[in-house]
Length: 235
Image (cartoon, rainbow, N blue to C red; front, side, top):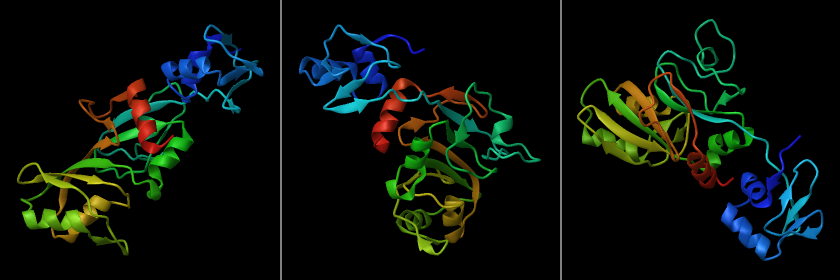
């Protein structure tokens, strides 16, 4: 049975609005409970009561799980059982979660793990163009000309890549931000300009950053991280 909760809390938990905004809607007589105008002091039972805002029914969202995970090298990001070690062999969460994007075993990455299929679709569909930031180390010193060519466009997999920000960090390393994703894209881009990737690390997905998360460590997204992520992907 669902808990009895204040109306403002219920509206904020459904991601309709913040608690403060909910109070404004209630005071403006725009929120109804079971067909009756709601008041600030009222509480509801989500299993029993019907809540509407602007004549639209508001339903409590299923509680999804959201984690960020620092994938070590040698781990494949698939939920399928393999003879080699995969991500499901090393994570331990109370919920059943799956990785957003499949990535190669040779890289270390920031990975999002979730049970929310809708968010996964928003993040992975090419038309939304969400940002993913990487730090790339090459086997030998990479030239300014090569970095410039990578930032413009590279023909891989029968299509030109989109222009992207590239910033030098040192003689051998640079930072790149993509708004698209193709199989082994950065490695193919670097190989096209006659260099080769030694190490590749994804450090950011939209507003979610790797920070000091060690390889193999997993952490639940904070409320603020989830809020900003949802805002950036339009949920």
